[in-house]
Length: 117
Image 1 (cartoon, rainbow, N blue to C red):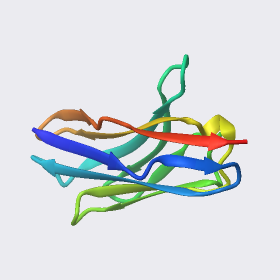
Image 2: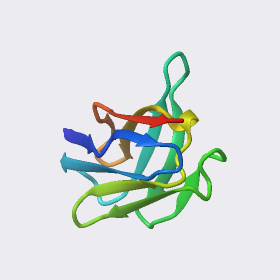
Image 3: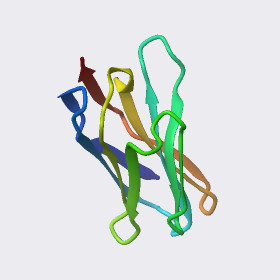
Image 4: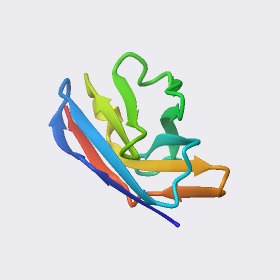
């Protein structure tokens, strides 16, 4: 089993920055994908950014150039640096880890990010 915990959410004004962190513990494979998702009220959960074990990243178009995902394989952590925040970035942000061996798809409890205009 893998335990995933997010931290770093909060309230920030538009144009500001926040850094989200996610720590995973347990039966973590060295080969996995770590993602950040978000879900705004009344909307579906959407993928924000992803990074694999080799450090290859992908971003949703809405956050490209503003958000940066990074990971520390030795510590099993993944971070999301969010700059130039907009009110539409307001959502609960979730960390997700997917791995094949052993198979698993693990979610954290989420952390609230609120951007005021």
